[in-house]
Image (cartoon, rainbow, N blue to C red; front, side, top):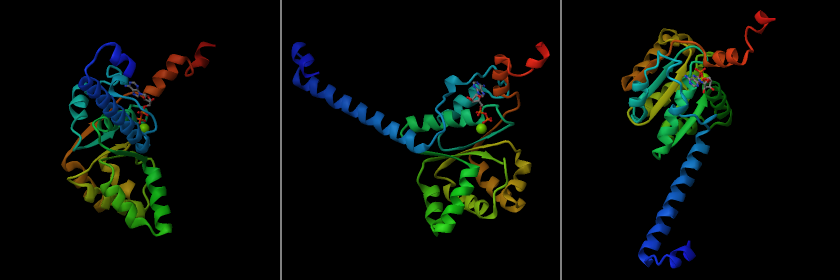
Length: 227
Ligand code: ADP
Ligand code: MG
């Protein structure tokens, strides 16, 4: 770049300006890469990779409106394969791009982390970390199996503490009515939902699994019919 600058007779100030800007750009890119890595997203897909025509129950406009509203909770409900995790990741990537931090974990991982922390005597530290640190927490697959009592209580505390200052994204295959079963307690589930839904948007996705579409296309399903 130095050679280029002297060849093109660029003023020292312009040269410095370019260097500083590039340095800033690199640092921003480095920081974003670090934040993406720390967020533990299972993969990176964006809204641009989402085929809205395949899933008409998801309003493209509503998703786009919500994309930049980083301080509200977003809850994605629906059967398997309809794109809940994909959309949750898209929301998370937008937040990360804007310089926020995020943490992705499944409900199963949350249970495992709670148990591990309890056995090590670090549960309070874990609750404090989840309550304050990442600007955004993405909790995936709520409802595939019930939370144990410990995790249900930790989750309630985290939701209560994050309330008003740190958004969450949840995906679930269960409707809200069934959340009592997930948390093993209707009163606790109601208290959790009360806080979660206060500043929130819910996407109720009803439709076919995208995974099935791909399998059908690849001829993996219904192959026996042809033979
Ligand atoms: P869910 O979390 O609802 O079970 P996923 O988000 O994991 O479903 O989606 C399953 C796979 O299908 C992923 O690879 C995802 O990227 C893809 N997918 C789902 N819906 C769409 C869609 N409408 N357009 C493009 N890809 C999709
Ligand atoms: Mg999923």
